[in-house]
Image (cartoon, rainbow, N blue to C red; front, side, top):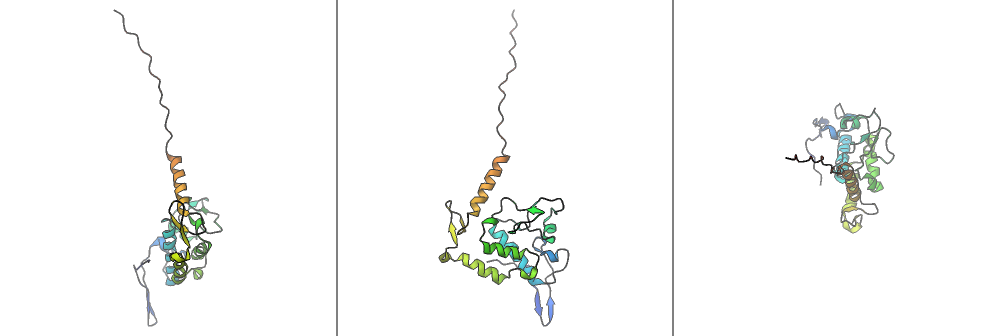
Length: 196
């Protein structure tokens, strides 16, 4: 279950009682720097961010590596420019973080994320669509989640994303661990004892 209730937008008798509080990291591109005029589009965006983070080890869908100096470095800047690095087509200004397991998601989940973080707010999956899609994976009888050889639970028919992530982190750790330095066994020359 996901429960996010920091504010409620209530339409009642032809009026709308807005929920103006927002979290910039979860604010849709079209509302960055402005008011939320379409709550359904905003809610769909925020929910998609939460789902992406839940199944991708906490990574935000707009955390990425800039490969072009024109790309903003802050999260809000990337969101406002629609710089989603994990799309199936990629992006010219940014690239995904190497620890992301997004390439090991089933195609139908990747398609939903591409729509959620694409340029058309009205195409974002609604909560009901996410529920219908993810509910299938939660039913053990369907066998859509299996255990890998190391015991991680992951999507059937896909290479294990957790094993992939572990391998990336291990290789990065090896790269930053300093190599042992060779001790210099040189000793200063012995001085002769003075004779008496």
